[in-house]
Each structure stands twice: as C-alpha cells, then as structure tokens.
Length: 214
Image 1 (cartoon, rainbow, N blue to C red):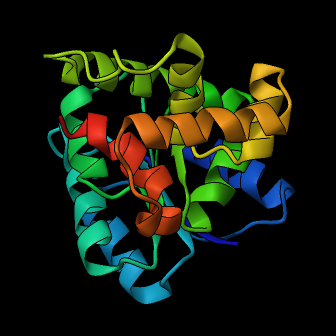
Image 2 (cartoon, rainbow, N blue to C red; image 1 turned 180 degrees about the horizontal axis):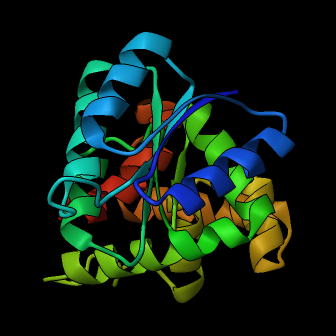
C-alpha cells in the first residue's frame, strides 16, 4: 500500500511515517501543506492519502480543500482525513454523496494502531472508514424529521456499523451477534428504507447516504 501523508506537525507526521513503515506500508511522500499534497498525489498516484484538515497558511480548511480536489480529480486515490475533533461541515463536504474510498477519523484513533491501519486499508481498497463519533453527529444533524424512526434500535446499530465500513462479519463481532442475525437486520433495513434488490450491492451505501444527505 503506497501512502502520501499531509500533516503540518513535524512530530505527528514523522510518527505516522514510522508507524506505517512498521506496518509494511510504503510512504512515498510526507508533506506539510495542501499545495504540496496535491503535487505529491499528481507525482506518485498513491493508493491512499492521510490528510490533516487544518494546515498552513491559515490553519482552517486547507487540508480539506485539497482532499476535495483529490476526490474529484483522482477518484482512484483513497482519502483518509484526520481531525482533532468532529467538524460536521467538513465531514459532510468530504463524503459528498459517495462513501467509496473515503475516511474521517479523529486523531485520537491513531493511537489505536490496529484500528487506524484497518481504516486506512479499507479506504485504500475503495471502502469507508468513518469515526463512530462522526457518524453519530452527522446522523443527529440530519434528523430534522427522524429518518431512523422506522428502524429498531438494533437495526440502527447495524446501520451505523455499515457506515463505518464494516463487513457483515465485522458487524457481528462488534455487536456480539451471529452473522445470520446481521444479515436479517440488514434485510430489514433495506426493506424499511425501501431499497430495492435491483440496487444490488450499492444498497449498503444507499442505506447510509439516505440519512447523511437528508
């Protein structure tokens, strides 16, 4: 897995580089601002980028704006954004109706190496890695009329786990239930959200986007 890192804090940047190299990832570039990130992506075409939201010169949204450019111009490159805390507007813009190859994690998650690497690999493979806190806040924000009211509490748990990019096996492990039960809950979610079997595998994504975009 080839990775570009964009983080203005030298200590954190070097720490992530070392962590990824220990996990047999190839860090092809490590930069400190949005412009350098875009140049690195153009030059190296990595599998995934790890991007800090706030970088020089204004430390507001430079990283996010660069991430959005990457999402638009380099669709094959996954983008995993790291933020100090949940910034709902930024998360909504990043997801932008497409959960493929995108992630948004709080920086605290980097301390959990297994969780961070798992999320990075999911994003690089075209999946999603959304922090549970991000999912929670986005769902609350979108609930002008509670769109989850039709789902049971357990179905809501399954839906959130789906939004985090977990497989059926991963959901079963997280919720401590059997895979058969997970499959049944997912079928009920599709039915209640009126997602037709003709939507195929995309129903998992549509089930999440239906509410993130409400």
